[in-house]
Structure formats: structure tokens, C-alpha cells
Image (cartoon, rainbow, N blue to C red; front, side, top):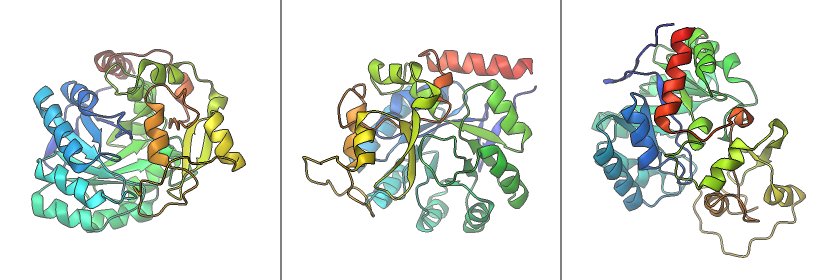
Length: 315
């Protein structure tokens, strides 16, 4: 098949692939720049960062690439406004946000000319986003890693959203190879977002031990957990999640107060940070997509794109 480009507002990526903004500190400048240099849209995960750290990551990515670089900030975090405004002040290419819905961000986007791209899981929310000024929507299904807004597969929701809105529609959840991309495009998507595959890339910020957890995983290692954010989250099962599920987990450190709303069952920011060295900690949370078991190698971003393009061109 002919590989289409992806246009969002005034931005055009030569390949219709957005790299997922995986927090905490999995998607940083090195990964985002590598994806942008391949013709996709690279994304820095701002969630869990301080505004100045995000500013430095954006500047680092700009030194590494002149491609399209976006940021993803979850609406659920207390510093949402500060982080988004920092990214906009650094003239970020676009802003992506999920885990809640901000009407204010569309105004910030209009004032600065920055495309705003919300993550949605229904046609209703996609329509509202378009009315408020969204430049595109990311339709995330139940296959996605991290916090989920639906239990429906992405390919079930995608045609409904495509019919309901006139802006670009990006499919997300369970996209690992060229066949997955082709299915999404044939179902009405203008492009796709890929997170889990890039988390197991050489340029992702996790340790080799963290990435090997993805490569060595099995299908039944993936589970849904109850996040303090108030949404289900998709993650690799480990002893930490078992203790959370039994409700016998104890926090030994005070809450850092990172979320607007939190059940305080455990500190999710601390647990995600604990996973970066490899998830060996008894307090590590390892988010992943439902299809993580299909990843069998840690590859460079360049090689991932080479394989994606080869498969798409052969279809």
C-alpha cells in the first residue's frame, strides 16, 4: 500500500505515526527526536516532570531534531496548566492530553497557534473536542497501555469517531507492526499512535532491564489494575500489583501530591519511577499495552521504522 502522510493543523509528518508519550520519563528527548528524525511525530511525556525539566527536554529534543516534536501531559496532574504553558512557550509543535478533559487547553492552543490533540474513547467526546477547537483526536482503545477510558477495542470505536468528526483521527492501542497500522488506516484512521513498541526501543529512557520485561513477557502477564487516578490501568503483573490488589500495600513515604484527585492507595508517580531501573523494586509499576508479548526484540527507532515501512509497502 502507499504510505500516507499525516497532517495535523499546519504540520505534516511524512509518515502517519505518532510515538506515544509514555510517563514517567520513558518518552524523553532522545526517543522523541529519533522518531521525528524518521518522519514520524515524536512526543515527550511531560507528566511527572517539573516545568523546568520539561523545558530542558524540549530544548534537548530540538538540538537533536528539526522534525515534529510534541508533548503529552495528563490532565489528572496538578501541574497540568504549568506544564502545557511551558511547552507552548517553548513553541512545541503540538500538545496531546488524556486522563481527563481540559477545556482551557483549547484556548491556550488558539492563542499560541499550537495544535491541541486530546485522547478520546468515544464519538461523543471527539465531537466535543472538535467543537472546542481540537486539531485532531487520538482514539484510544482498551488495548492501550497505562490509563484507559474504555473497555472497547480501538477498531470498534474508530469508525464511529471517523463518521462523527471532520478532523484527523488517530488510532491508538495494540499497534505494534505494519499490519496493525494498515488495519487502522483501512478502518478510517488518518494515522496511528504507537507507545509500547517504542518503549522497547534503544532510545527509550528505561533501562535495559526494564525493556527486557517487555521482550520476555507473555500474554497472561498483562493485567488491569485500579489506579489512584480513578481509572483502570494496563500493566505487567508483578508482586507490587499483587499487593495493591490484596490491599495490603503500605506506603513508607508521604504522598507527593501530584494529582488533582487521588485515592492514595499508593503513589503512582513513585511506582512508575521505580520501574525505570528494571521493575525489580517491590514498589514498581510497569505500564504496557495488551499486545506487549508480541515484542521479541529491543530495536533502534530506525530499525522499527524500517520494518514498519517494509511491511506497509508490501501490503
